[in-house]
Length: 118
Length: 112
View 1 (tube, rainbow over the protein chains, first blue to last red):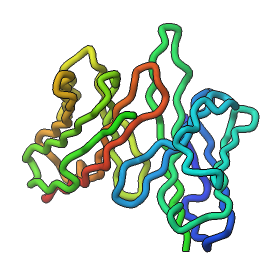
View 2 (view 1 turned 120 degrees about the vertical axis):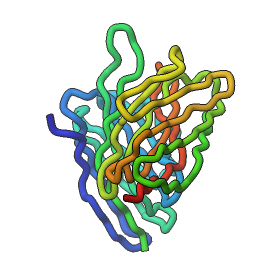
View 3 (view 1 turned 60 degrees about the vertical axis):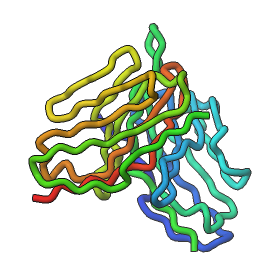
């Protein structure tokens, strides 16, 4: 089974430019999460999709960040315009829908996109 | 919201010794605690998890303990090997919730 994939693996852009990150979850996983890790700090939640719907976007830093998941498959995270403090590693994770008994499913992580804003 | 603290930030041990990483959490509603291992240049991978209805779980050389009263949980690695060198993240979540709240990570180095 293929794991979560992310593209690109690295991105270096200048302040004010736009960057779009892509995540392809494991096939059949309804839940898709975006996280970010700024160097030396915790992996911090950004938002959660259930299929194509935003379930929770409480972690999105500001309106320069826009996430979409058209058709409930892959997701994109766009940063426009990028600022210096947006630098970090952006992780995507996916999990199956809860079973009949409910409950959280294991989250499988992608390799991350390393974003550097100069 | 939930706050997870993780210590130490770096840890060096001799091969064959044990390593212990500790985490505390603030929200008593949290009841699921996974541990992820991230090797250099690779993705975080789940190595063990524990739910709040048990106090300890073991998988070969790895064990996790949970003290709900004190709101802390720990990862124990015995007989460490060089391939255990990685960054380890603890996390907390509510069983029926969505996001994981992560600690800041522990960089473990096992010296051959």
